[in-house]
Amino acid sequence: METDILPFIFFFIALFYSSVGFGGGSSYLAILSLFLGDFYEIRSTALVLNVCVVTIGTLIFIRRRVFDFSQFWPFLILSIPMAYLGAQLRLTQEAFFLILGAALMMAGLFMILKFVRYRLESHNFSLSKKLSLGGGVGLLAGISGIGGGIYLSPVLNLMEWKDARTIASLASVFILVNSLSGLIGLNVAGTFHVDTDLILKLLVAVILGGSIGSYLSNEKFNVRFIGVLTAILVTYVGLRLILLHGFGIRI
Image (cartoon, rainbow, N blue to C red; front, side):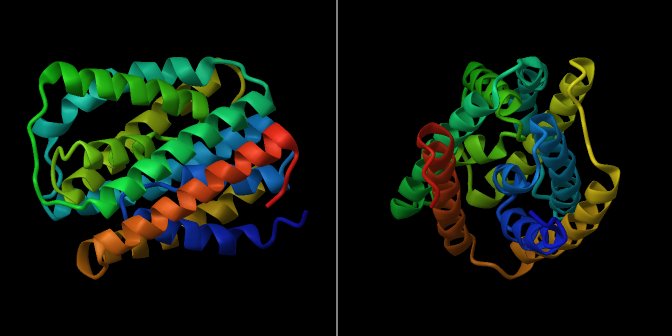
């Protein structure tokens, strides 16, 4: 398929996902699978784009003083090595997309459930709970080839850890560090492949989209409304991957 349309598609994906603190890796993977034949190029490209988008979001959250490292570090300390290990696992393309699809459907349903029963309460987590959540999601992130914020964020929202904006800022930095760790894991395993010409075009698109989306997230957008739309999109992408790679059905 012709790849010239990809920068336009990825611009809107980056804008949409960055508005709720995500990088868009799940949709990058799904769309790239339609255009590229190299499985490892798909994973590598998605992780690089993830890093660019969430770097912008993380910097904006820090500038707006939403970012709180004292609250965040326990989620990160185990997630980084686990994402590295997960990225080194060699899976078949079918197994990879089935795992990704199942994880996305679960994340999307959790997000929908959270916003249906939306509350403003928050609870403190123990250090052990933060470590175990971070490590488990980090491993899944490394295996599935995305930063993992899209898994962590709905779980934290559902468990009412903090307000939605604080969780979005954690998701942003979580995706950043785990995407970098995943890229290192791919490189060490010898499976890091990118098309330089294509990725440069996509980088320009996602940087523009991510910048606009991150600004809108902090200034204009209704977080609950965007969260529901994101949940629907995530669930659809997960279902599509399972049907396509598990049953050969296209929707």
